[in-house]
Image (cartoon, rainbow, N blue to C red; front, side, top):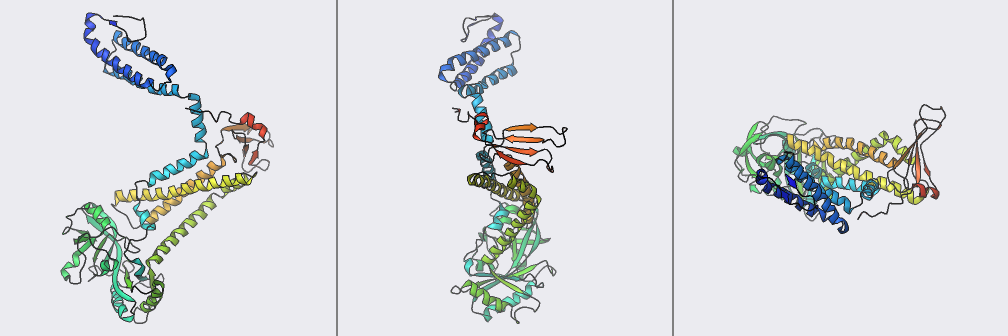
Amino acid sequence: MRYSTDSLAPRRVIVDKEDVLSTRPLNKLLWWCYLVLRLASWLVPQRRRLEWRREWEAEVWHWRHFLVESGRLSVSTEQDLLRHCWGAFADALWHRFNRVAVARFVNEFLRTPRFCLLACLTLLAGLLIGRPVTVFQDVFAPPPNIDSDHLLTVSLGEKSSWLQPEVLHDSAVRWPAQTQLIDSDATYAWRPSVVRGPEGEENIASARVTSGLFGLLGVRPILGRDFQESDSPQCEDCVVLSNMLWGSQFRRDEHVIGRSFLLNSRRVKIIGVLPQFRFPAHEIGVYSPFGQNPHPLLPMYEWPGVLLRVSGGSNLETAKRQVEVVVNGVDSAPASTTLDVLSLKDIENQSLESWAGLIILAVLLLLALNWRQFARLRTTGPHASLHDCLHWYLFFATKTTLLLITALVASFELVQAVVSRTNGSTHPLASGAAIWLFLIGAGMAVTWSVRDQLRRCRTCLRSFGVQVEIGGAARGLLELTGVELVCDEGHGTLHVPLMDSSCVDFERWIYLDDSWHALLGNQEAGISVS
C-alpha cells in the first residue's frame, strides 16, 4: 500500500486490488472521525482553531493507516480510534480555558466558606426535594381534623390506674346529661396490633371506635361506608381501613370492599376506606366497631379515650376546665382513675415540648462530649475586631445548624426506608428509633463542624492552604515543636503544638501584619477563567 504525504488534509490513498473492498468502510470511519473533530474545534479559540484541527486530523489519518498496514484493523480498534476522537472535546476545552487558572480557581473555591455552606445546602435539599418523610410529618404536622377548635380528648392521666374501655364508655354516655357544653361524644380504645394481608405481615396500631366517631371528626370514607348504630352483631368482624394501610397492603385497589385479611390472627372484612387524615395523638391503621370485645381483657395494653365536641358558642379553655370537673366527678369515674382533658392544640404542644426536651438533651450531650473542641474554638478564635468575631461565630452557627437539620432529616429518611422495606408502612416505634439515630448523626456532624472551623483562617474563613512543620519530636525537650497552618492570604497563622498537654507550648492564633501580604497574599485570585 502507498499513500501521499503532501498535506495534512484527507489524503488520496493508492491501494492495491486486494484493498479495494476495505476502502469504503475505512473512508466511512475517517469521515466520522473528522466530523467529531470538526464539532470539537468549535470550542477552540478561532485564531487557533485551524492549526488545532490539522494536528488532530493528521494524528487520526496516520493512526488509521497504521492499523491497515499492520493488519490490526478490527471493530475493536475502530471503536478505540473513534473514542480517542471524542477525547478531543476535553483537549479543546483546555484550549478555550487556561488550565492553570481553572485548577487554581477550583482549588481556591473548594476552600472558601461559600462552598462549605453550598455543599451543606445541596445535601439538605437533596434529602428534602421530592421525598416526604412520613414519620417526620406525623411528629410535626398538626392533625388535619375539621373544626378542631371545638374538639376535646379525654384520656387516662400519667398517674392514673388503668381503666377498662367499656367502663369509660359507660361513663362517657352520662356526661352530656351532666353539662350542656358537650354536644356529642365518641369512645375509642387503641392498641398495638399485627395485620397479615396480601403484602405480608405488618405492625400497626388498631382502634375500636363507636359509630359516631368519624362523624364527630367530620371524616367520610372515600370507599364503602363507616360503622352505623344499626349494624347487627354479625358486623363485629367488619373493619374500616386507614388510607395508609389501604396503600401498603392493597395498593389502593378500588375494589377492596368485601375483601378480608387477618387482624391479630382474626379474619376481618373490609367495609370502608378513609381519606388521608391523622387520628388525634395516634396513627391508627385499622378501625373496628367498639361493641363486644372479641379479645381477652388486656390491662395496660389497650388504652381507652373519648372524643368530645363542645358547643360552638363556648370558649374552648373555659369549656375544658368545666368538662374536666364533670369527667372527674364522683359519679363519673372510679376513685383511682384520673382523666386528663386536652384540646388538640394541647396535644401538639406536648409533642413539641417532648421533642424540644430531647433536642436540648442532645445538645447538652454533644457539648459534654465535645467540650475540649469547643474550648479550642474559644481560645484560638479571632480576637482582633468585632467584625471578625461575628463573622467567625455566625459562619460556625449557620454551618452547624444546616448539618444538624440534615442529620435529623437523614435519620427519619433512613428509618422510614428500613421500616418500609421490612414492615411496609410506618411502625409506631419508628420515631424513637429515628431520635437515637439522630443523636449519633448529630454528634458526628458537630465534631466535623468544629474540626473544620478550627482549620480555617480567623479573618477570611478559608481553609488553610500552607502547612509548615516546626522542629522535630526527637529534638530538645524544651524546644518548641509542632505545626503552623498559614493562611495563603497572609492574614495569620495557627500554631498547633505537637503535644496537647504540653506546659511549654500551646495552641494559638497569630495575626500577621500587612508586610506578609506581598509574600503570602494570593495575587492571582482575580484571574479570569473565561
